[in-house]
Image 1 (cartoon, rainbow, N blue to C red):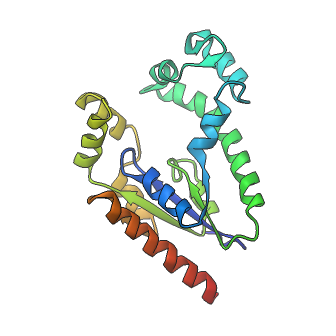
Image 2: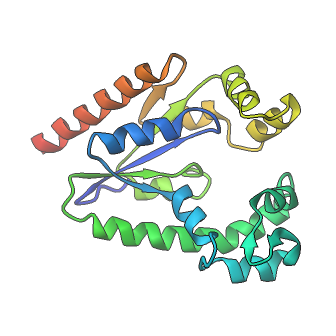
Image 3: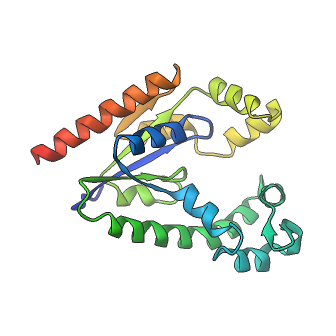
Length: 203
């Protein structure tokens, strides 16, 4: 991994593993967080820079007037590798260009957290000094997705469509378990952040 003047921490994890909560915890601790999903949502919000290319690629069928209908887009691409690749070819260059801009803006910060669900899949882990993976066992992922209103089949398809969390955890430098309540994972994130700040201070 490449070390930078500002220490770049990649934060990743599978769907419903609790990554968003960990990211929010780190932000509350004062970490500068660059959220890849947040950037993607902004690019596809009304007036977003990605909308013309998305409309050209997928047509009016995934729009409600001028606004992207995310549910229809998800239905159009989910489980279809070629369609997902086409969407990613539009969004990923824009997302990562904006991430680089925000990293540059954060110059002078001791560390920046890069919240990227597809960190390994996109190769952006090579941009990081270290990677933290948020992990939960598959049965908990499925339970959490069921609580969000998915059917069991939908939950299983979503989990299976991603790199296995075990593989992400194996590759990571640090693993944050989210098998307890949110206070436990928040404490684990805080301990990792405090440890990182001490390591950086010591040079």
